[in-house]
Amino acid sequence: MGARRLVLAALAIAAAAPGVAQAHLVATGMGPIYDGITHFGLSPEDYLPAVALAFLAGLRGPATVRLLLAVLPLAWLAGGLLALAGLAAPPAVISAATAVMFLGIGGGLAANLDLPRWGSVVAAGALGALRGAADLSGVAPSLPHVASLAGMAASVFVVFAIATSLTLPLTRAWMVIAVRVSGSWLAASGLLLAGWVWRYGARVTGS
Image (spheres, rainbow, N blue to C red):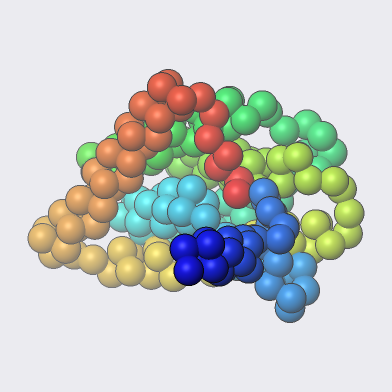
C-alpha cells in the first residue's frame, strides 16, 4: 500500500512539473506582440518604476507628461534593440541598476522632487534603456522578438498615459500625499532589491 502511494505521488509530481523553462519572454500563443504585452504586465520590475515615474511626471504638469510619454517608450525600444544586438550589460549590473532606479524614482516621488525638464528626460531615458535591455538580455535576435519588444513599448505608452491621468488633476494635499506614499513603497522595494543583490548576487530581472 505504501509503495502504491509512493508511485502515485511520483506520477503526480512528474505530471505537474513544467516541461519547458522560459527565462525571458512569456508565450501566450496569441503572437509575439501579445507576448510582449503580457511580459510587461507580469514584470513588476518593469511596470512599478514606470508607474511611479508617471505619477511624478503628472505632478510636474502636462508639458513634462507629454515629453516623457515620448521618451520612455522610445528608450525602451532602444534598450531592447541594443540587447538583441548583444550589447546588454551583465546581469549583476542590470540588477544593481534596477535597484538604483527603484530607489531614485521612488524617492523622488516620495519627496515630490521638482526635477528640471532635462532631469526628467534623463530619468525616463535611463529607465527605458535599462528595462528594455533587461527584458531582451540573452535573447537571440529575430523578428518575433522585435515584435515582442514593440508590444512592451506599446504597453509602456498606455500604462504611462493612464497613470499620469490619475495625478495630473490632483489639487488636494491629501491626494498628493497618498501618491507620494506609493513612491516610498517603491523606494523601500529598491532597498530590498539592493540588499538581495548585495547578499545573493544578480537577480534575473527580465524573467
